[in-house]
Image 1 (cartoon, protein in one colour):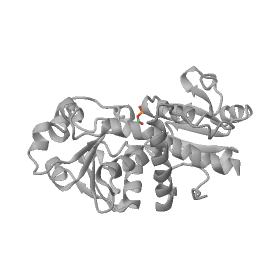
Image 2 (spheres, rainbow, N blue to C red; image 1 turned 90 degrees about the vertical axis):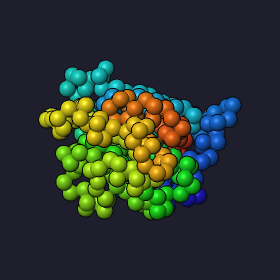
Image 3 (cartoon, rainbow, N blue to C red; image 1 turned 135 degrees about the vertical axis):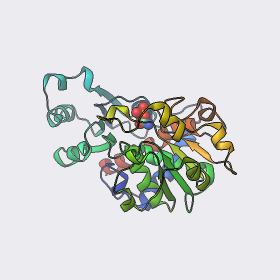
Image 4 (cartoon, helix red, strand yellow; image 1 turned 45 degrees about the vertical axis):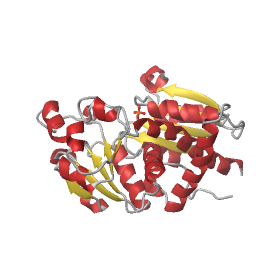
Length: 309
Ligand code: CP
């Protein structure tokens, strides 16, 4: 049986093209499963998974939980707001206490960059990074790539622009790594203040004119402005941001082709994207969410096979 080259899923940076192909092949199978009347397989009846969310989440948390339940794993959920972290317990102590309850895999979202890697180094369990600060969000990037491949047939030589708040985005970095591994060309577009200074070192194109970016691409992945990670103003006003970088129907009609529109969610309707575009046939936003369950089932299944060996 084919195996992942990694023992944890900490970031796309640690994966190779064969890993992504294996995850997608496995996800194809699970996508078929979750579209059956009985959407469940008994594969992980002997595995227990803890979902640790130290930051808010709707899609990622529910998608992981559903993926685990579809695989018949036992699942426990932890949210920092209702936990003893509030009483001063450290991350390592929290996790070691959870592991003492015979947990096999930890899925963790944490506001600090490197938190997932820290746990992988300092605890004896499998770790899946569900987003660490503004660093990586590997399952989001995998489901994004999978959704583009499903729509366009391949990633090879496709042109993808990531639009908006690149500076504070873990989705952007993971997408850049994942798309490039699969042979896509990547551009970032947004206000200069929201584009990291050294981004060109990642071999991406940089554009500040939204119309030129849309004209160039096959796919536009639109990001939310992450106000919660901002301690200063990066642009004069939300209204100005929307005027210069918001995706609306008039802008899409002004380019001479139909492109695919993506968004990782949560959407701020009327800010980075209008409702008309988000709800249009050009947008594959809910396909991304559907594919997220199959992708997460694939990752959990592949990592669990390493435990069972
Ligand atoms: N895309 C994403 O990570 O959404 P949530 O923050 O709701 O999990």
